[in-house]
Length: 332
Image (cartoon, rainbow, N blue to C red; front, side, top):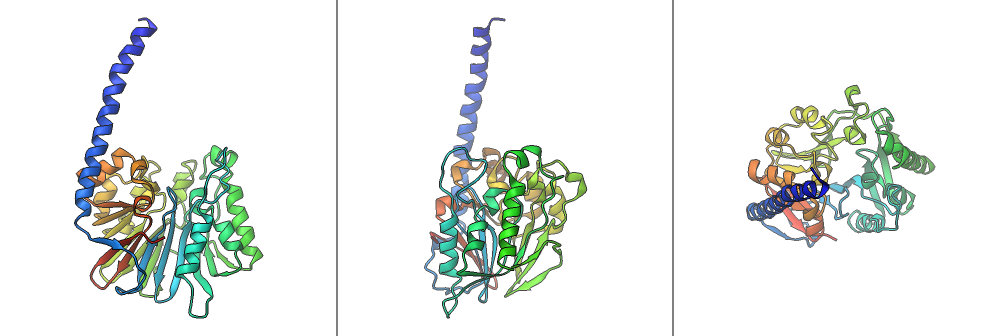
């Protein structure tokens, strides 16, 4: 068979396939938008009329930075992508200043001081912990303690250390914490603890040995956040492709709100995971157009869950009352 004929056959296969995926993507977005009308999303004005038990999902493009707030206590789960990702070959815009500015605006106390009761890095990918170096170095932000489980090179893939330098990113942050004498907790517990009106619990605090070589996403720490009958799960970069979804799903159980794992990329939010957690609301820390079609399909066609993208909403806050979760956007 000559090359021209092979190219022609490949074209006839690939073009219809791409067209079908494109149409599927449009359909899932349209259906997802119709599901979103189940919940009223209003613009945030920070009047706190519905209380101060809140999860702030910051708009840091396709990276994670999540602020937990309750009764004047604040905790930061990941800090978004910084300005110097070793993976990037050319200059680009990070979100260090946006995260720092938001913390200084929201976490300011009556005396003008800014204090985070704790910070946590879910895992050592730069799009989750990259901005921590700048935040920790800002002496205007007080930090009580830092939860960072030790980096395990046996879990990481070779390219993550050799090209992405995630071991160096981790060590730079640990050195910055030590430089400010901030307590580092590396031996994390999976016991529940009280944080204001919330109860928090960390999941996957010790990465199972069978995940060696699966990549740093397999080290992801999930966070369960509960108030009364309402529960959220912040899934970091927990994915089916690493096998971690299967491990954490029985521990987490039913939730009301799910922060989708791995920004809605391929390998996250499998049908079995969504069935096990049965969320009513999903938040994706990404731009809607970058969420993989199969993830949108699982959310809309299978789980029938409305999902909201932090980028398209310019950040989202989920406020927990005694009996409901209220969503507001445009928080920056």
